[in-house]
Image (cartoon, rainbow, N blue to C red; front, side):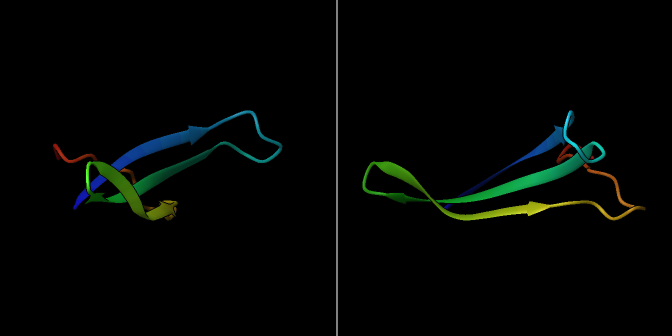
Length: 54
């Protein structure tokens, strides 16, 4: 099992710019990594996206 995440900034939409985090979970099936979970989250007004080095 493995997890990966990234911070995404969407600009140029009809709405205001949007910052969000994508988290993806993987399971190894034979020789391939298969996505078993995908989650998008948006910080609340007081939250900030914090990386693993903090």
